[in-house]
Image 1 (cartoon, rainbow, N blue to C red):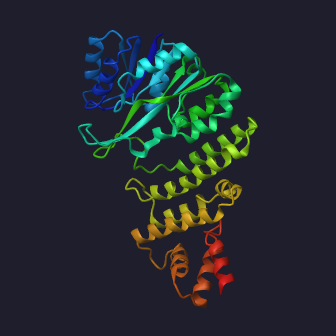
Image 2 (tube, rainbow, N blue to C red; image 1 turned 135 degrees about the vertical axis):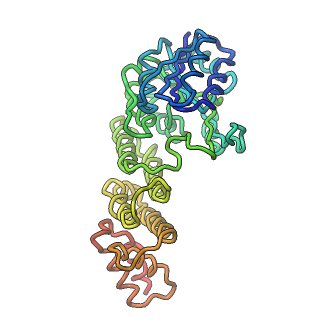
Image 3 (cartoon, rainbow, N blue to C red; image 1 turned 90 degrees about the vertical axis):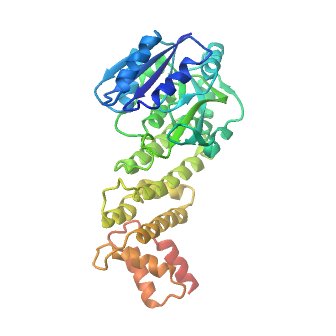
Length: 386
């Protein structure tokens, strides 16, 4: 059985040969590696061509820069294997990983084999400084085979909660990938891809053994979505949340199986959205950041999400906490139209409040730039305790 491995690479002359080496040294030999050189301007192209000359199983495709997911789509078009696996050019496949997934693909013939990812922090020489951070692999303790569509759907919330359906580091049968393309407009296109294929997955296997090594580099910017501000992130998170709510609803799954999970993730993403405003790559002014936190993030979707699990106070706490951190980092001017946010926090946090504090809190809660009335829950508690 032939496995096609697709590796997009862009300006990564230092690490991608190590990723290739992790494939060449596998004990399973029936593979082809398709390297998509995405318009590299360093020595990546030259090195890739040299590597391909040394092994007839390796092919290099050079294209203009189109980003990682367009590269994956191009690789899928060229792939000849029964199954397709993806690897980032700065990661590795575990020793024996290909043989493991090939053996199980032959035995079970599933549409997807979900493989565990080990996440490591490393230095610039790819020496691991922190092994298996996050311990994501501990969410999967058993190998499981879902032999039909009903079993796949009933267990999909588990695939999500165990982080297996969070990325593209899985073995997919080629027919699925030919039917569904990766989007090229958001960094979570891998997660959205897994949502898109979900209705067409008729069988699936979960492996308990890790297959993929993902590296977090502290000294460079290789990890695409780490430490960067994306203006589309809020809408992307809402879309992911809504698509999963719709999907599980259509499948008629019990809300007990997924609602708490989806709500919890969306609320954690609220904090992530706020934290991204602190990144150096964020071009927004302080007033724009404050408007983002108060006017955009707590929109109808997020508020409705919190209400489903009666977690409105948690949502408000996350937003107020984010406001506090932001205003500790950046000084707001008294003539700013967003100065009421500073007054809201100052009055809420004052130990002994006077009438002026209550007036400032009420003014902030009902301010036009606070359409979700953030602070109202705590304001109502304060009024009851007076």
